[in-house]
Length: 88
Image (cartoon, rainbow, N blue to C red):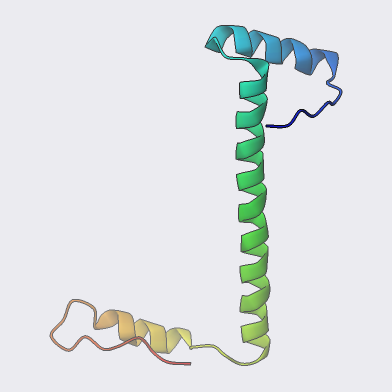
């Protein structure tokens, strides 16, 4: 495990001390937990951005299925004549 130094605003330091005391946890534990959550959220945002860019590229390239085709397919769900998903 490594050590990293950084500056905290006074109000943030006070809140961190209060939370650490209330949870009976160290400030390091709380900071690590907060960073894990932040990093996971940022990674999810990056994944969503990549997927959006891919979807836009598909749209621009004409790789789409019409809403009408999708609705026809959905109407067959749960019936004896259920069809496969429409292809691009």
